[in-house]
Image (tube, helix red, strand yellow):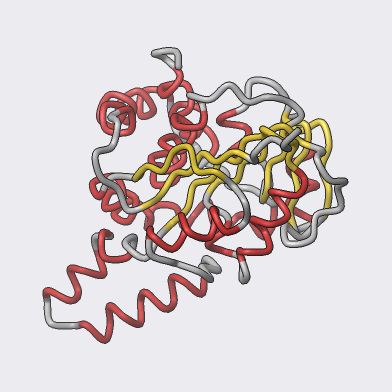
Length: 267
């Protein structure tokens, strides 16, 4: 990975969305940016193309999502050659169609993620690579506000906040780290790398700054994307303060990264 890639991802995201998301997503982009992705490439759960705008220098071959409105917005980014309205649990593609499949913090939002993994396996070519980032059941305890509420003697308020948060952001399957690995192997993949990502410090900062994301989030129903108005000098201050943190290789983390391979057919 080139030395300036993390800063590139971080700056791009700061121009697209709030600081909280820039912190989190630039870490995921940093890890994905280490791989040389073979084409054709499939993005599972591309949404409205925000991550692709920060990450991709060249258009991605295919993106799929369940939201037609999000796909329309994604089409305007010019970061995808093709976009398809589809359920990741029932992909409309032939077997062995893609050399790379990646999905960024998506599977935890989908019920019956086993079907997604089976479909990813089916559409990958033998020898193809699956790249996943996933939230786990360790995320909530590493946030800032909800653990603070528990320390202040308000566990019921903290639990209510967690339920509302999970409902609002459609988090369906927050599983233990060990479970995700078994699911991927059960689908037929050979796990080549499993790594903790998103450090507890990044997670806490995400939670602290998330409140500042609401103005841009409230605009989404009307314009289909987040909008921020951030002067260049503010961007530079944020980069100076937070780039060392998002650039640092994690020794521990609340999320998971998987790189898995579909075995080649036996001769």
